[in-house]
Length: 143
Image (cartoon, rainbow, N blue to C red; front, side):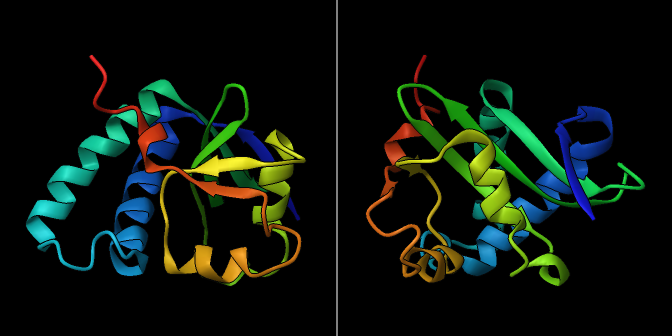
Protein backbone atom coordinates (compact mmCIF):
# COMPACT_ATOMS: atom_id res chain seq x y z
CA UNK A 1 0.00 0.00 0.00
CA UNK A 2 1.00 3.59 -0.62
CA UNK A 3 0.74 6.60 1.66
CA UNK A 4 1.66 10.26 1.27
CA UNK A 5 4.05 12.37 3.27
CA UNK A 6 5.75 15.75 3.08
CA UNK A 7 9.02 16.24 1.21
CA UNK A 8 12.24 15.68 3.16
CA UNK A 9 15.05 17.46 1.38
CA UNK A 10 17.85 15.32 2.80
CA UNK A 11 16.36 11.97 1.77
CA UNK A 12 14.11 12.88 -1.18
CA UNK A 13 16.01 15.47 -3.18
CA UNK A 14 18.13 13.10 -5.29
CA UNK A 15 15.05 11.00 -6.19
CA UNK A 16 13.19 14.09 -7.37
CA UNK A 17 16.05 15.51 -9.45
CA UNK A 18 17.00 12.21 -11.08
CA UNK A 19 13.46 11.24 -12.02
CA UNK A 20 12.15 14.66 -13.01
CA UNK A 21 15.18 15.47 -15.15
CA UNK A 22 15.32 12.09 -16.92
CA UNK A 23 11.58 11.55 -17.30
CA UNK A 24 10.87 15.03 -18.67
CA UNK A 25 13.88 14.83 -21.00
CA UNK A 26 12.59 11.58 -22.48
CA UNK A 27 8.87 12.42 -22.39
CA UNK A 28 8.49 16.07 -23.36
CA UNK A 29 7.97 18.08 -26.49
CA UNK A 30 9.96 20.84 -24.80
CA UNK A 31 13.24 18.92 -24.53
CA UNK A 32 13.14 17.13 -27.88
CA UNK A 33 15.38 19.64 -29.66
CA UNK A 34 17.63 20.59 -26.75
CA UNK A 35 21.05 19.00 -26.36
CA UNK A 36 21.61 16.84 -23.28
CA UNK A 37 24.13 19.28 -21.80
CA UNK A 38 21.92 22.35 -22.22
CA UNK A 39 18.80 20.59 -20.96
CA UNK A 40 20.29 19.00 -17.85
CA UNK A 41 22.11 22.17 -16.78
CA UNK A 42 19.20 24.46 -17.55
CA UNK A 43 16.34 22.37 -16.24
CA UNK A 44 18.17 21.59 -13.01
CA UNK A 45 17.98 25.34 -12.35
CA UNK A 46 14.26 25.32 -13.08
CA UNK A 47 13.73 22.50 -10.58
CA UNK A 48 15.92 24.28 -8.00
CA UNK A 49 13.67 27.33 -8.11
CA UNK A 50 10.44 25.35 -8.14
CA UNK A 51 11.44 23.24 -5.12
CA UNK A 52 12.29 26.42 -3.20
CA UNK A 53 8.94 28.10 -3.82
CA UNK A 54 6.56 25.13 -4.05
CA UNK A 55 5.22 22.36 -1.90
CA UNK A 56 6.11 18.73 -2.57
CA UNK A 57 4.13 15.66 -1.63
CA UNK A 58 5.81 12.26 -1.72
CA UNK A 59 4.11 8.91 -2.47
CA UNK A 60 5.84 6.26 -0.39
CA UNK A 61 5.52 2.66 0.75
CA UNK A 62 3.21 2.45 3.75
CA UNK A 63 5.61 0.15 5.63
CA UNK A 64 8.83 2.03 4.77
CA UNK A 65 8.61 5.77 4.13
CA UNK A 66 12.09 5.76 2.61
CA UNK A 67 10.81 3.71 -0.35
CA UNK A 68 9.57 6.41 -2.72
CA UNK A 69 7.25 5.56 -5.60
CA UNK A 70 6.43 9.07 -6.78
CA UNK A 71 5.98 12.75 -6.03
CA UNK A 72 4.05 15.89 -6.91
CA UNK A 73 5.45 19.43 -6.88
CA UNK A 74 2.71 22.05 -6.67
CA UNK A 75 1.61 25.49 -5.52
CA UNK A 76 -1.70 26.53 -4.08
CA UNK A 77 -2.94 29.94 -5.13
CA UNK A 78 -6.32 30.94 -6.55
CA UNK A 79 -6.28 27.52 -8.14
CA UNK A 80 -3.72 24.73 -7.82
CA UNK A 81 -0.68 24.79 -10.07
CA UNK A 82 0.87 21.37 -10.65
CA UNK A 83 4.50 21.69 -11.70
CA UNK A 84 5.26 18.00 -11.96
CA UNK A 85 3.94 14.58 -11.05
CA UNK A 86 6.12 11.52 -11.37
CA UNK A 87 5.20 7.92 -10.56
CA UNK A 88 7.63 5.01 -10.98
CA UNK A 89 6.75 2.80 -13.94
CA UNK A 90 5.81 -0.25 -11.82
CA UNK A 91 3.32 1.82 -9.83
CA UNK A 92 1.49 3.53 -12.69
CA UNK A 93 -2.13 2.91 -13.62
CA UNK A 94 -3.20 2.11 -10.06
CA UNK A 95 -4.42 5.60 -9.16
CA UNK A 96 -1.45 7.08 -7.28
CA UNK A 97 -1.28 10.17 -9.49
CA UNK A 98 -5.04 10.65 -9.18
CA UNK A 99 -4.76 10.42 -5.38
CA UNK A 100 -1.92 12.95 -5.35
CA UNK A 101 -4.05 15.37 -7.38
CA UNK A 102 -7.03 14.79 -5.09
CA UNK A 103 -4.89 16.00 -2.17
CA UNK A 104 -4.81 19.50 -3.68
CA UNK A 105 -7.77 19.82 -6.04
CA UNK A 106 -11.16 18.44 -6.92
CA UNK A 107 -11.68 20.89 -9.74
CA UNK A 108 -9.74 22.79 -12.37
CA UNK A 109 -5.98 23.05 -12.09
CA UNK A 110 -3.12 24.47 -14.10
CA UNK A 111 0.08 22.64 -14.95
CA UNK A 112 3.45 23.86 -16.16
CA UNK A 113 5.19 20.81 -17.68
CA UNK A 114 3.62 19.08 -20.68
CA UNK A 115 4.82 15.55 -21.42
CA UNK A 116 3.64 12.64 -23.52
CA UNK A 117 2.08 11.24 -20.34
CA UNK A 118 -0.08 14.36 -20.09
CA UNK A 119 -1.44 13.59 -23.56
CA UNK A 120 -2.73 10.26 -22.24
CA UNK A 121 -4.17 11.73 -19.05
CA UNK A 122 -5.86 14.63 -20.78
CA UNK A 123 -7.89 12.25 -22.97
CA UNK A 124 -9.56 10.72 -19.93
CA UNK A 125 -13.00 12.20 -19.36
CA UNK A 126 -12.17 12.81 -15.69
CA UNK A 127 -9.66 15.48 -16.65
CA UNK A 128 -11.02 16.93 -19.89
CA UNK A 129 -11.55 20.68 -19.51
CA UNK A 130 -10.08 20.62 -15.98
CA UNK A 131 -6.43 20.84 -17.00
CA UNK A 132 -5.04 24.20 -18.10
CA UNK A 133 -1.53 24.24 -19.52
CA UNK A 134 0.26 27.43 -18.52
CA UNK A 135 4.07 27.30 -18.51
CA UNK A 136 4.20 30.97 -17.49
CA UNK A 137 3.07 29.95 -14.02
CA UNK A 138 6.57 28.57 -13.48
CA UNK A 139 7.39 32.03 -12.14
CA UNK A 140 11.11 31.34 -12.40
CA UNK A 141 11.94 34.57 -14.18
CA UNK A 142 10.64 36.85 -11.44
CA UNK A 143 13.12 38.89 -9.43
